[in-house]
Image 1 (cartoon, rainbow, N blue to C red):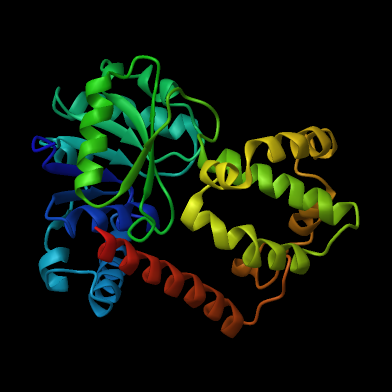
Image 2 (tube, rainbow, N blue to C red):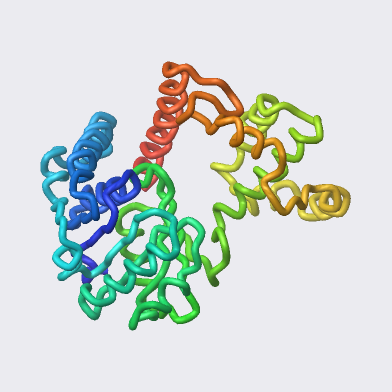
Length: 313
């Protein structure tokens, strides 16, 4: 863990910036690079703004400028990773792009460096196969916003060494993250498989006329959504009784959606240009004020839980 001191991050967008903040607030030195150096100004402003929000809520132990000063913006990729112990890739979700990048990282990062991808869906073996160090390649899937959501899914490929996984797991745990190790690679890992399974069933309920999006959101918010932060899935099952759940599984599982594609309801929204908050309309319509209120509500909930995590540590 102590050997993973110098962190290189590739991609100065929102994810890369907030991952950098997560490391630098814990005292790690970070070199952040991007193929578009004009992104650095936006990244630095975002990092300072997010650090200031953390400080405002008592979640930063040092002055904002001290934290921000640990991030060095480096336009040249080889220089950014030349002395890195851990490199985290946070570029667009494009396999060809990531493979080109991992070839470059393999050439320019030190031989001991671990190469991690923040991909949310791609198999780590597809990235490891283009390097000469497959035992040191894995996925470290952060969730947005990376500086507020504690989970990081660690996904080894078939060749990833247990020492690599443990080194990254121990580092992240020391930063206050909650790393979860996926035992073998699979599409979507754990989190996305679970949330997209729920989305598939929600879409099916809308398309079959059982419920509106509004009523589905009400059910989630005010029933099992209240329990999951405390007891997760399997503790909840144990509390309910596995015999009871076994009976319900036999009744319900055969009737659940097994759709193999997005379906007409979400496809129709996309075709009509209703893309969500960013277009002003999706399942709901949003004024700019309503969009800001939704973002603020999410931020306040994440801050409240982050304070709770700090108090329980």
